[in-house]
Image (cartoon, rainbow, N blue to C red; front, side, top):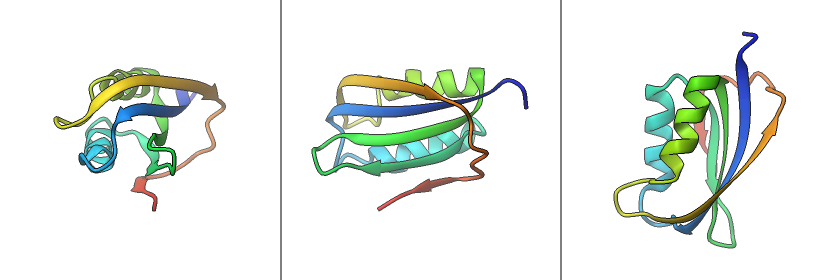
Length: 92
């Protein structure tokens, strides 16, 4: 697990009410990425991704497009040490 990465991501734009969280969960599960995703009161989506470097990079790249109905304006990434999250959940 030496190549395990953790990215804390904030996505801005039209990203709520467009199945962004559900699609993020599906993409994460396909890539074997652990973490969570949730809506923020300011209209952004916040997510944490933990997994291999390639898988986490793939999730960040995917966030720039998002779900089919989303209109992503920006993606902010903060790197941190992995915390050993298991599974992927949509937080409320």
